Image (tube, rainbow, N blue to C red):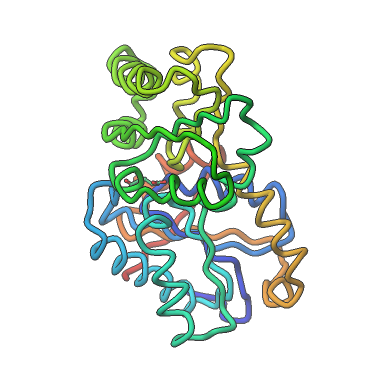
Length: 276
Ligand code: DGL
């Protein structure tokens, strides 16, 4: 049952990855209410078309609105790349101009200026995120002279989802993708993990990355950005209830979500099933 007296902040991801972001939201904003929605029945989104990712993401956002959320964070790079702009510009004005939907790409890009000296940045992401060029476009809006190279890592999400983060097979694929990125541009001094799953691979990524290269996971960056956003928009903050509750919904098996999701969230989870 949904408690409609609450106005939680909605957090959406195609599956488990957004839990790495939610974990940091809860640390930074422990008094806010959150609802997490993972579309595990239809994950992964990484290789799907624009139309499919957009329609799935819109369904999830509408469901979170129905559940009382006035603010929804799309905590998925693939969905942020392929659906966020259309939802913000086309759907929101028709649905309710007072609600807000935010993504993870812009806040992550904003911090890059303070990280790189060479102004050469590497992006790792899903096929969908990389082929959308969303990071490239956002980076060049803020930093015209940055050189950006991207590498799609199609196997990383399934490896993480299957809890295969620490074995020689995973090492092989992580090394291969990192080496390709660095071969494409040896001047890179910062690698951005443009997928919410990748923080779970950070030890393996470090193993194959030269020490002078900074690795940038986005979970804390996005949480800091949300905190600033709520401070700068008291009218939105006033529409977020504050009883410190966190609820988890999945479109697939709750048992599996609780088991695997707790690895991403780093705490036990008791999820509920939802139909989109
Ligand atoms: N969590 C998604 C992201 O950040 C990737 C997972 C998927 O392919 O569905 O891009």
